[in-house]
Length: 182
View (cartoon, rainbow, N blue to C red):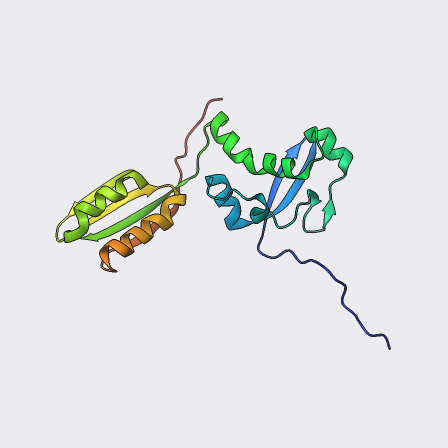
């Protein structure tokens, strides 16, 4: 009878796989999901906090590391840090060259009358589009916001209204559909 002894394996937990195709080959890096968002927003500066491991993979889930000659051929370097920064910057570059942007969230804000005017001025820079505004005993607004601003809006409403205001997510992604010419 044999005894099973576990091998020392590094398990990747809370993984966000960032994939990139370059030179006909697919490359992947393993990152922390929330840190990738912070990196792209410019809030996170330390690459080691974003990456789970400094390796560039062909397949993260199988643990297949990319060959050095493939990296050199596709990226012109085998410096893993620089390659990981190309992969993380791709979205920002696409945003600039193709004009893509994140889908907006539709929120319903309910603010007490006392704080409404003052709070509306603080919220204005964070709101993309105000779709409707109704002021009776309280201010009710339906607006579109960038998903990156959600937490800041939520904290602002909670702190300024001491729990009397509310924030409701109407839809997570508001997308305009139509034909696009290239």
